[in-house]
Length: 241
Image (cartoon, rainbow, N blue to C red):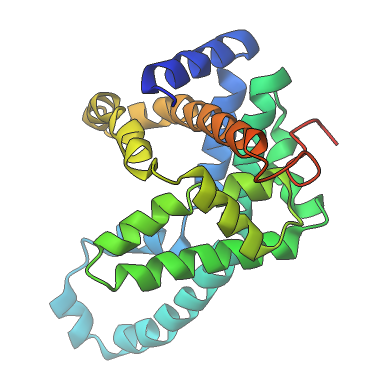
């Protein structure tokens, strides 16, 4: 069984050995490109006077046309760009723990030969979590941790079937979902400190968090290998292609 402190120590060692600023830049790029466009518009318009909008027929007509188009664009962007980039970031951090990665690894997904499979699997992941969340939220949270390793599995094997990716994630997180939750919770002090700085500190925290989760996945993939649940043909590692 892994310990939070051990994973974090390994993450710090990687960031110290191969450098912090490249992972920092990677998280900034993905954070920007994977941001939901609808969220940006929501932030920009949150201070608008609703009463004034309702009284302005032309503006209201514009919004009734613009918002559906925005939602469609947001869905397409998240599905075909945002989610694959998240998988690309996982690939980046798994490579980085071995030999130091390059920004190009973030976009590896688009030339991996399994791009559409990644899009489909990530869409199914988010759909499953959403549907489970309709059952009083808690089941959705549990499922989100059960599927936690799916993006990492895709980052390692982009052509693996969706069904198999979910199976492997389920095996990796069996009896460990609460431990993964606690691992995330262990960053709460840094998160509070980062929030005090108007969120800027959170940007600097993200490489450390991602590097720690990369160490977690390495432990879990070794577990399924040792138990003959998977093999090196299915999960071959993260050497540069």
